[in-house]
Image (cartoon, rainbow, N blue to C red; front, side, top):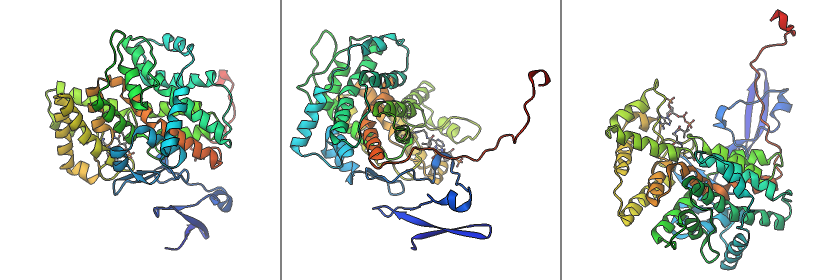
Length: 428
Ligand code: CMC
């Protein structure tokens, strides 16, 4: 293949260089397009064909169903690594040595206390507030309690911000859930692993010692790893674009949480469970809901199905489906909605509407079933997604700043009124 793309506009032709990634992905570098063509731009709603950056963090091949963080396959990481190792690899470029991991964990623990005044902010929210709104606000509030901007060119400064947010974020997550449940706000224990500590903070009751379940610990580790990064998705692009104005890390993360909240993105895990519950309440007639999903006059979509990039099985969904079977079996739970989910999947995989459009179960289709088995309330599911995605967001923010990317500022094609004269209010 030549390394030049040619563009013809009227009688003029232009050449643009191709950019090739390490996995042979190809892009046309149109950096000079506007200048060369006297103002012509490209338009690509939803950025379906637009690469916003070059990135060395996550590789995703949606046709083949491949997902790798820093070159390591998601299947291997989910089986052999723990979440903190994966977080380190995403943020710092490679898996840590034993010493690096110990130091990382110890520094996180040293930074895991949240200013007590944050409790007052949490207190002011109604119990009915959605946990994603609360988490986004509390993350934003951290900027007030940790003023000063990060000097991204200083490795030490950057490291300090990373361990601060990695330490405090799980506390905010646990408190968000505890507030909703009317439980006292607590802390974990420095003697526990990162994920074990999260479980203790979330589930410890005020009147009994918390007993760690290895089944829950393994399940949460796996879920967090599988959610840890997914290249330039909606929330990650948000984090990068907010950060591109040189807004701080915590402010950028807070914006990312808001982007994740929507049901077409991370909010799908809550929406899937609500959908499965609704189907169960309605007598379990999956065929009726399949028909609704295919009806173009019905806004209903089969939540947890389809993906912008995967046009094959989402590799995360494969792992989570197996994990859901195992966790429910290990915990001795029989959940009728698992049967409904399996039924929907089978029907979709054999239905020309879904087959032709390459719609497969995504990461969110089975994750809620595990969260529910773990005792996590439905409204907290997307918060759990955010907890997993945190290292990915940090890694992408750091990369964007270190690469000195320009401020994100797309163009538009204006379709409004041409110039018109002002009319005084009496004449309107
Ligand atoms: N149910 C029924 N039809 C669907 C679905 C679905 N879940 N998803 C896509 N389609 C149809 C869509 O109507 C369109 O049909 P047509 O070509 O006839 O107009 C076609 O498939 C292509 O869909 P699209 O909306 O153009 O695709 P997109 O890339 O813009 O959207 C998506 C991707 C994930 C937003 C979409 O598949 C969807 O809404 N899925 C349900 C929500 C969901 O599960 N989201 C979680 C995504 S994975 C977690 C994450 O990383 O965020």
